[in-house]
Image (cartoon, rainbow, N blue to C red; front, side, top):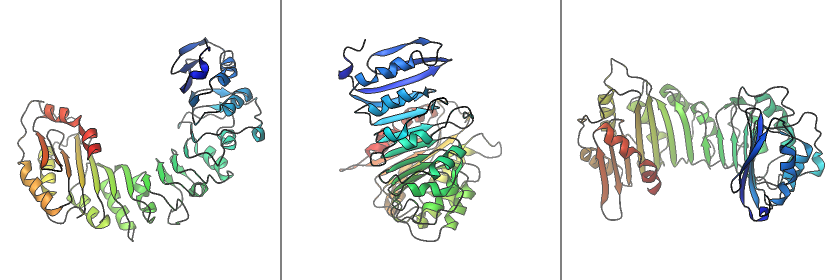
Length: 399
């Protein structure tokens, strides 16, 4: 079975399903099946040395023995390890000083609600195995207590440039272990303010809750900001919290549609004056019987053409509205003002503008400035808009 193992490159994925263990790897299929937790896994790790070209390893629901940990550490080409709900078997003692996991990317994921006290020592052994002069990307998604207890005692990770922390809340002091991080993503909020510029001092890209947005804006290196679903009043509060300049070039934000109007969008002009790229998503989870959302969206788009609404240096803009169950037949023509009027207003006020995407859920306009002339398209039925929407990623990337 392993006669050509040395020529294999790519990744292994080791998983447990329905109380069984199976080993899956990209080029040689899947082998299984046993009810024992170790009868297959132990031989699997004994043979891992044969895969000298192995670069990526992904395991789920596996309790690692000392021999398995040692096998991973010996893999000469291994660069990426991703562990989901994995632990070192409680009865095992891993000889940490003699082992090193020389990967550049490491991901440890114990999802919320899935951690139990009997799942072993959690992330601590794995963090101790990492070579701090090798690791460049680190993702931690685990129980809050595990994160605080184990990372508080961890040394610096001087070369990590991409950090992801998926936990609802955490002690901000954890971030001081990562002085070189340029890309930081989180779904939680630090329990202390982040005004101290020694925390993530060279941060360039931040993805996180709207509630923490203002905390990181004081970094002069920060140029890209993404916030998930945000309530309009919280967004305005965050803007008011921060007093100072910034160098933001790209901003992506998703809003809860309730209470949104141009007063939510227009502060972006003064707050991010250097902005080049703006992507706004607006979600209405259900229709308000007292509001004509189609007219609301059309009015909103028309107001984008008013003076002094968006940053003057804007080059790319996209606004996406999603309206729960729109209740409009897919082939019904939507009456909206000609896009040419709005396009003229936008290109007059924002001379650097080269890309516009306006998605009203039931209608859609796009415009792309080319080297010679421009390309534009419009959809005024729901079905046409759905088809046109499939092209957004290519449209946005090419711009």
